[in-house]
Image 1 (cartoon, rainbow, N blue to C red):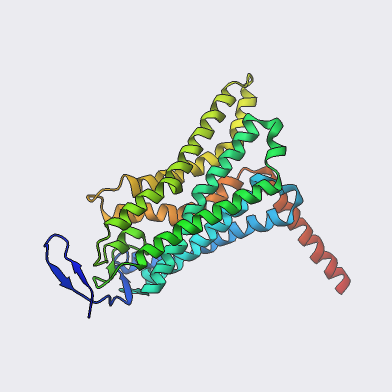
Image 2: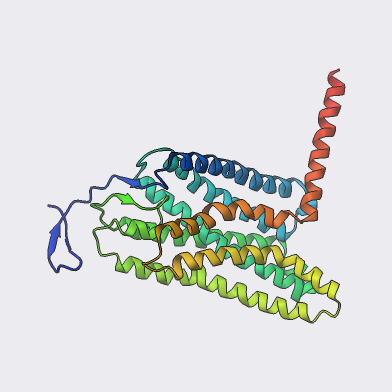
Length: 331
């Protein structure tokens, strides 16, 4: 016998079967030229994002001069961005190319999990990185003794475990719901709110749970990050020379840029969002933190970083020397 659930708003009981096996996406536009341009732009950003972040991981891994906490955290940020990119963009490419594309229900749940995992991890990691900058600027004499390799490893492991647990809680809660239709999402990936709209169950408890979990996942990390930068700004302002203040600020300017961009889009998308907000604006905001942020992070952190540039030049020089020597031996 099929389960019964109270129909919201009518006060009557309705009978249904949880029969949604596939979820469809509405897509971006009916304009073929726009979709073709969007496809190639997304494809280019996909390969560039993966290439940039893999390059950072390789440079830090194989260059001993970069074996410092800041660069170790940077590789973890790249891992997180790679996970988010692989989770989101291939599905977007399918949506752009095909009319009324679909994903299996289990695939949708999997995508939601691997979306929440890197998003939550990046919140924790940005907080850890702000603490790293706080120690480097506000307590430089104790930096080396506190930020050792073992402590950095524990911070990274704790960030991954917390984000895995939080994302798993969301998935388990959603799996307890019943879905009987509609089966169409007006979005380009399986986000929490669009998915809840498809449920025939009472989703109020899941929404309350999401609000409660967002406190340790987003709110507390953001507050800790702000507090760290308050101490950093106060310390920098106490430096007597302008060049000293500028040099100290430059060490955390890249991280501050990423924090502002990341939390800014998340806040507008999930905290300040209202029912009158158009789907176009929602999509643009979602593209910013799922596609644009992973693409821009390597540029923001590495464009003016002399250590990264030097490591890249060394690898290129060593590779040229190796192939040159191999060629001579071959001849």
